[in-house]
Length: 114
Image 1 (cartoon, rainbow, N blue to C red):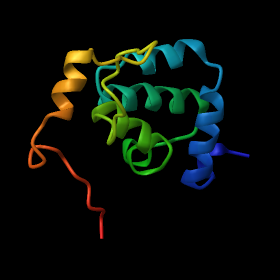
Image 2: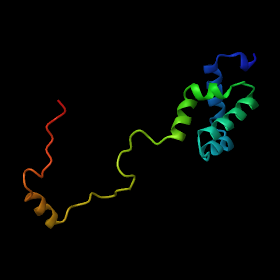
Image 3: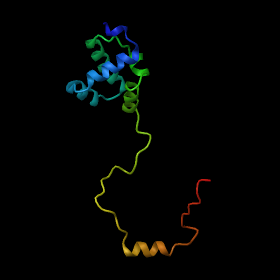
Image 4: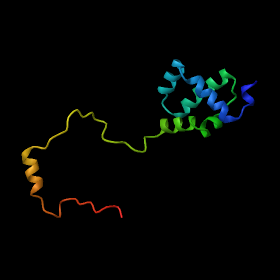
């Protein structure tokens, strides 16, 4: 059976399976400066496998569409400041005493979302 006659989703699935364990290709994808370079590498892999995928197929079909988006953009949500913390920072006694003496108007209060 000719893989280029399969639907796009199945050809993408075949490409993803072929990429699993392909060290050189994965290393090249990881070091790409942007999503366009990733698409170029994936187009080459598609041609070697005879899948006949186009640039449009790769940029509009998940999961590759999502890989390209994450390569071009920052994450939507980042938790913390990416600094490793090994123990909790304890405030000094002078800081905790100063916080206790704050005016009530300076304290932040959470009233809820509704």
